[in-house]
Amino acid sequence: MALKLYGTSVSASTSRAMTCLYEKGVEFEFVSVNLFAGEHKQPPFLAKNPFGQIPVLEDGDLTLFESRAITAYVAEKFKETGYDLMRHNNVEEAALVKVWVEVEGQRYNPAIAPIVYQFFVAPLQGKSPVQTIIDENSEKLAKVLDIYEAKLSTSKYLAGDFYSLADLHHLPYTFYLMETPVASVINERPHVKAWWEDISSRPAFQKVAAGMTFGGK
Amino acid sequence: MAAIKVHGHVISTATQRVLATLYERELEFEFVAVNMGAGEHKKEPFISLNPFGQLPALEQGDLKLFESRAITQYIAHEYADKGTNLICSGKQMAILSVWMEVEAHQFDPAASKLVWELLYKQMFGMATDTAVVEDNEAKLAKVLDIYESRLSQSKYLACGDFTLADVHHVPNIAYLLKTQCKKLFDARPHVSAWVADITARPAWAKVLAMQANQ
Image (cartoon, rainbow over all chains, first blue to last red; front, side, top):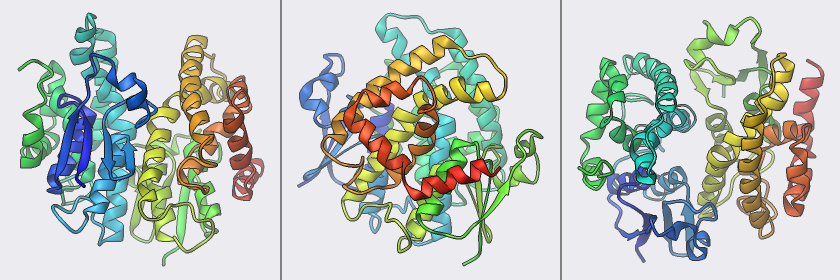
């Protein structure tokens, strides 16, 4: 039975999971969830994810939620095929991948997500972007990226000289950020910029990015 | 294998998360106290261990790790045959990942803000922001409603046994029990039973002893 991924093509978290599936060359069925109709907050969906959020992955009788748990599962289950995202044959490299996966989740995401929300989601709810939220978080993101700039001047990717799940997790929100004026935080840092251009040009992400049309492009 | 060194501070919840895991795995380690008051964590040599200047960091030979949840996962998997199990087997490992992510993205943001406002700020002589407390108590309550439902189906969060998903919660929960937020846990019977269980573990008592002896 094929894997089933529930979500929407414009959702950053769904895109995170989908990019991982494409990198591993795993067959899956995409099931669109009608967020505007509140489908994700209704009982049938809540039975899959009690937090009422996308994406959800079903693999037989296994139901998973939280995009980074989904990517960890896919990368582990299919570790012998497709691209090696977790460096499972090298204990130290695998540990470093986990470190930078946590950095994305704990440092990068909390700063970038509110910025993307203000530019792309708030307008859909009839609200204007709140500039103070954008400014505060842009400052936080800039500080995080100063550290990335230093790290990426010593290694090609975050966990080492190899593309990994840690880099992949950054793709969707950064893609949206690049469509806003805050793209400058990436463009002003040469190593970060080069890293971004590299990881966003990977075919697996290009496939997913084609559906990420939040800005209406 | 080379000796494990943990650089941290006993009042730091992230440090405690790592210490609890090391004690659960019954591993020997050296604890290097970092002088936060003197800003030691924002300077060399600590910055070379963690460029983000935050506690804790782990050193083992040439391996340098930071981010408490990356460190606990390394410890749990690398020493899988020692001490408490902490991880699930087979497909259940995926369920463990789910609930570790839930702790990181659903529970921790609200819980850590409350710990900061109600405890750390008191320690540092700063004023609590009651609006932030109210907002995050409401968020935490919603998350705990989902935990109540989960824990009525399963004794622990991930598979049937105590795992990393549970241990990751202990430091923030232990602090919150000392505040007005205790009522949020007491009001939910399954959550309350789970909290009593995970905070009574001998490994956690050892972490508390380190705080007392500081």
